[in-house]
Length: 327
Image (cartoon, rainbow, N blue to C red; front, side, top):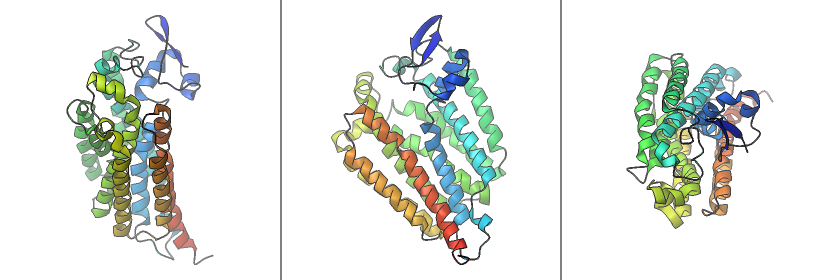
């Protein structure tokens, strides 16, 4: 387990992975900040990144047909690099804001009470400064795009700022998380076109449903502690009906994704990736044991595979249609 210095004492960070590169490369004085931004847990920024990459691939492959230039059906590499940097920066900022808002709650939950703020490794002032630096990095990324996309990106800040407080007032904080985490589906499309249409909106709605599903699985890890401290979640709301809820959420997500593909007129082979993603999501539901926290965490993390399957289907499907006449 990772060891870090806190107020002159060595303590364990319960939910930090062992042996991560963050703790090998960074000096111990920076480890608490890595914890705040969750740099040692990349699944968060990966799940934030996927709607961006899906949308970038969707807009590039829209209407692809035999004879098209191969480079025109591939998503912009420059945009994908920007989305990567932005996802890491804004996920870190969101986690830092969440920890600032939840310091009192984290101190009462076994899995989170050793985090930097409740354990005293970082002061609230230091955390706010770190939050500002991450937001500046995100701003630098956003300013590379057209002004419509800049305005669209700023609009998401209302949702991001509201999310940490939703678990106190609604059983659906995962819905607000989904709205924030899926915003990249709109941003990536507008970054390329300077506008929005039905296709990215359908992709956005589908990504929201997907996010509610996988974060419900994640929330089952803490449901007992959450009940004690009054934190609300879809995990507690659905309870024993979680599998049925996941069938509806994941099924709805796949239908929205298929609709986005159809409206954008992407090549049919792209549906192969969507079908494979559906099989993976169905398996999650079948094997899920909501009373097994370790398995819930594994299944939550496996949604990165869903991201890869859908993205690969869009990219490889377009390439297949374009290069097939040559073959």
